[in-house]
Length: 104
Ligand code: FES
Image (cartoon, rainbow, N blue to C red):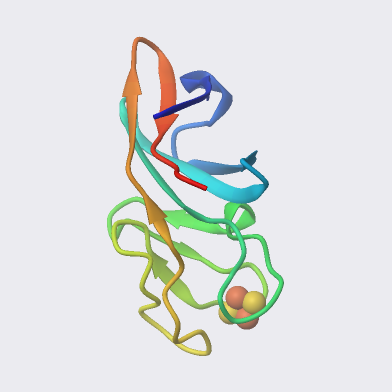
């Protein structure tokens, strides 16, 4: 797994994009020690999903451009206009750091 950042660099209830091995990955922190990582680029167009609003109850993020809701656990869109899933990456918080599993 790749050591991405200190856990506090991603606010609870928010997301942040990181470039890992040349790929933009959005990391979302939904609780103190619970994170999800998905591709940052929306599958519909060029929007950055890390800039979307996170629904902590539904565990999804709303694309800031056209509003598709993406499930943080599966990467699947729940609403149109996006219909293609984005990639997900196993991630965890360990010793105060966020780790993401990524193979180029
Ligand atoms: S760019 Fe995300 S729904 Fe259109």
